[in-house]
Length: 305
Image (cartoon, rainbow, N blue to C red; front, top):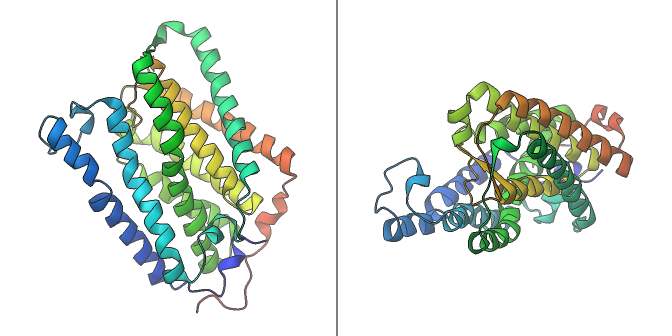
C-alpha cells in the first residue's frame, strides 16, 4: 500500500493541514476570483453585489470558464505549497508514488460517462416532454472546449484536496480506513452547501447526493490505493452535466445540449445510488479489489514529526 502510508512519518502536524486549507481558501476566493470580478464589472451589469452571479448578464460560456479559474489557481498553488509545507512531492498525494496511473483515470472516466449517457438517453426517450433541445453550434463548440480543457482542473483540485490530501491527513490521525472514507465525504458534501441546487430543491434531498458521491469516491480511493479512479469519474460527471444537460438552479449553468424542465430530487437520489453501485461493481471486477483492505489499519512507527 502506498497512498495513505506514504505520508506517515512525514511533516503531518495538524497545523500544517490547517495552514494549507486556509491558504488555498484565501487563494481561491480572493485571488482566483479576480478575473471573474473584473469581467463582471467591465462586461456585466456593473455590480457584484448580487449573490446570484447568473444574473450578471455575461455569456454563459464565459461565466463558466471564469468560475473554473479559481480552482485552477488553487490547484497550482497547492502543487507549489505541498513540498515546503509537508516535505513530499505532489504526486504522493495522488497515490503515494511518483507515477500517475492514467489508464485508471480514463477507464473510470469512460465507465461513468457511459452510465450517465445511458440514463439520459432512457430518460429522454421516456420523458421527452421534460427536455428541451438547446443546440447552438456557436455556443456548443466553445462549451466543449471549456468542459474538456478546464473542468478536469476543477475536479482534480477537489479530488486532490479531499480524497488525496485530506484522506492522508485523516489516515495519519486515525489510522482507520473507514474514517478516511467518511470524514472527507461529509466535508466534501458541506463544501457544496452554497450550491444553488441546495436552495432550489432542499438540503435533505440534495446534500445526500454530494455526500454519497464523496463516499463512493472515498471507497474507490481506499480500494485502489490512489485517487485516479475518483479523479476520472468526477471529471466525467461534471463534463457530462455541463455539456449535455442543465436545469434551473444548476451550479453548472451552461448552454448544454438539453435543458431539463422539471427536476425530481428524490428520483435523482435513488438513481445516483444505483449509478454508484454499478460503478463500484464494474471497477471492482476490473481491478480485483479486496474489500478486506478496509479492515486493515494504517500503520506507522510514529504519527508526527
